[in-house]
Image (cartoon, rainbow, N blue to C red; front, top):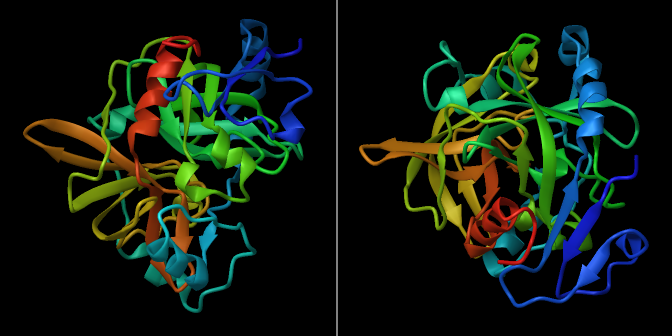
Length: 313
């Protein structure tokens, strides 16, 4: 079955999407998003596809790298252009990259109970995974490079979210809609817009709150990194804000790599637990420094757009 694809944008120069995405203009606020609907008819095939063996043998999404030059440009401009590059090997990476990360001993405890692994079949027919978390009862936040091929714009197949994933098991949620920012598609590796929201079928008993503007200076990150326990168990690490521009935020003490993309940055206090960022790219000169898009009104508007079934509001 051909998927229905809807897009409301104020930008018309998107060559690879014009043949199959319906485009209209709208007022600022409900534009600049690409929304794709996954029909229920695909659910059974996706659920059957993700056997325990396939979940355990999948390959993690590669964590993009932020080079020194790109890092410098991030601090010099309000919007930065990042490129995916072949990862540079870092000497003595094993111990240095895992010393600050620890197992989540009880994934049933909040906010870990809202976290899970996002599984997909990419455009090369390779089974893969990323990390995600519920930011409402039926919406999951993750990285855009976890759901879509950035160069072609093609959405990955067999998308499924497994809440409280652990060693091949987790609560299955079928993905119904996927929304990404159009600027992730129209620029090469545009990390400031490397985030995605997924509407799932069903309701999670636990979810966190998505906030903008990085209102805190310390937090902890989560993920399912392959470099720690093969990505089969949820990990966490504490860190602090080390810098921010008009587009990205940096976190120190985060050594999680492939498979941890999309994992949330959580801050918990008396007011509750907030998601203030996600893992999207590590700094090549310091593999324990991670970057996240700086969440602003765009992601809030995207969430409202998805909650309104990808219609103007």
